Length: 453
Image (cartoon, rainbow, N blue to C red; front, side, top):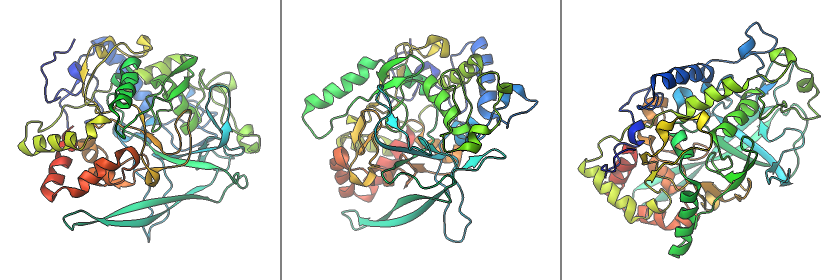
């Protein structure tokens, strides 16, 4: 078990922590893996990064892409195991279609007794803007920006950019009038296995303690159906905590993002109206699912053992001042700093090295009402249209080095930490108001602290 004498949380992942920066900072294996586990990590990495190809193909282990998709590999969205960004729709440039930003779709009502969403009748639960030969892409995503201007108490002006999404060139006719859509950016993957190893009791305790505190912050657990466990579990992945395990998340992404079927999701995502999609060739020579259980398990293992990098400049005077301001503004009420991990739900898909680690992810893994400005209006299991899961903060300061940008929040609308806080509302309105009252030096210190995590 990792030692407890780490008061500044410099070893973000306990004994799994790596000391890394630069473009590959999110791509290292947990530091305490065995040699055998490192070999498995490398195998999973190869299937995570390499492109899948259209069927039929001579590459039997990697064929079956599509018929509809948004990326050709896991790494196409999670570049360098990092965070995506919204497409560049600036004036004068050709409209770039999103890859690391997907659009969730649904209509009111429940799809099944497990409590999941009801997919849009023609376009399903996810919009796909790419397709294999002989199949029409579902259409194009459109995006424009509306400026929202404000001032801090010291008179400093700021401008936020509100994204307005839509669809064009729909290949299979109009969507339902009551369609609900929600943009979702691909997050960085460091430490997801450690998050999966947080005990469900700890997550429930977070909700109970917030409810007992009597203030505006009252997080909620999302109870979701897990295809791997075949039971309802506490949600902890996805922007609305709508997925409970890495295995379910990974198999769902293979099917939804790349059109790769598995034993967990064996059917292609073609609606009855998409005749060309239904007629397209299947991978694995049409004899079964397109990614076998062993390969899927290796990809899950790879993700679960990606190490969080150590904190940087944790003892810096400015960083320590920002840490005090972070706690004073009650940010830590939702961004809970630390846990000790238990054993994950599927030991064969992770590593015993993840168990018993003192970790510092800065999240409560709960749903919170974040106000009207961030609301997507789309429920997901027990999450309502104003709720979002508290994202972990570890690694935020390295996103620019890894991915070349600083886009944050569920759709990348915030350019940096300060803008992300300014978008907060609802349960976090009081914290945002404290930020608005801060002087420039205090705001800088707060950002420096978050970027040190």
